[in-house]
Length: 362
Image (cartoon, rainbow, N blue to C red; front, side, top):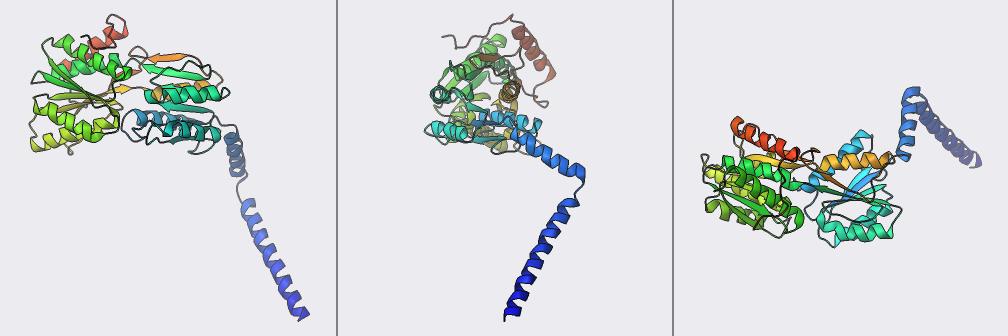
């Protein structure tokens, strides 16, 4: 019995040694360069400057504002060889405004070096949490927070929206166009004001309907509002309503599908919403989109912070002159003669020859 037990123990020891030896051999067989790269990657991850963001209620896949910001975060991560997750880049999604504080604090606990709050509605949360954590870096998009550890990012939406107004008025056959806004706040007021000014600049007699839905995450409200406008004769709608604007596209596509000859258009916002307007392989209701360079700003600020040049306490404003706002490629929907007019106004605004107001003139 003793010999049998001893034999079993000896066999176990030899088996374990063989397994360990095999593992060691497998690692030893790796090329020296490969092992060197693995070690270098581990070291660089330790020193990485990590970035994360908290969405507003529109969600990260709103095909608009939040999505553009997330694309910027991902682009920064890719540029520096980072992976999604702790020590790299990430996001947390807010289902309601009650999630803002908890999401920001969750990212703080995960030790991200720079944290973005996306949207005007996060202003109070960023202000309070930045004050409680003076050694951490924050950025707020579309609002201003006066704190040394916060950089505020604003855009001259009215300048890009002016061009959208020119396009809408020139492309309308009915002489009626519409604006669908989300929440009635200064940033959306700037979209509305620019749209009105641009349209009136090329057609003083144009009729413009304007409606705020009081939400950025209610596609059903966007659809109902668009239905009312199109039914009244409006043939071009510019939306600045986040995910609510998805409903505007839904209504336009349904109408275009029923009547392929109808002059029905939508002008998207923040990101290029061409895919959102696709009816079929040959038909699309997206005239153009007013691009807001949130992704560009996120990459720019993240790199500045990484390089020790974090613009804390400052407000950075991006307009036409800074390539912060512009119209997306219309993919041929806008004819050359109309595009020429748009380009002429773009140049005048960028040079400061035209000052676009931030509120609709009553």
